[in-house]
Image 1 (cartoon, helix red, strand yellow):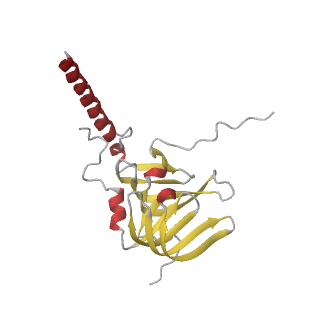
Image 2: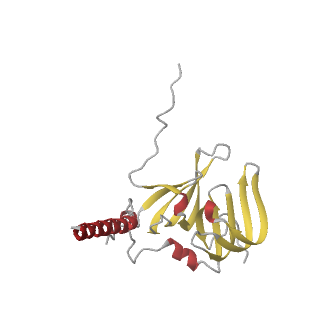
Image 3: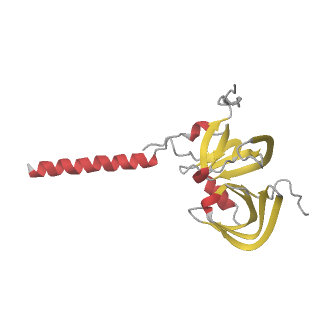
Length: 95
Length: 118
């Protein structure tokens, strides 16, 4: 059996890292100029994501647009990066 | 004779069956050589990021540490600014990764394709 393409037990599996993040804040960066920050409730094989208490950031030429949403199902089709624990870089923390 | 042909046929299908098994597990890119190294990743849609490869899976999802994202000009999405932002530990979705290359052994060069006028 070919082992070369399989990670050895020392490497970190990406979806395991996402799984560890369930229950905490996560920052999702889409392929376009949208980003979402929310609490991760769960995800599926396609990395569609269920997020709570979401803030949506859109970088447009006019400047950043922010919307707030309650609970959303985010389609995994357009996700580029996931940042566990992340609030938006550059935003200040409260407390 | 009929039984011999039957035997050969089943052997043939076993061989292709094994080949299919082997092909499914083999990736054309072995990322283990990039582990703990700094790599640059480009995404469909134009985003670019660089970080230290900490993990991956056969679907090309990646775990990068100390990640910086390279920001683009808002007026011209194809133009990279010198500006970057630090993202820390990130997971990159394999479905939108289009390019992976090592930072070591890569450099930016002036555009060789600019047409000379006159």
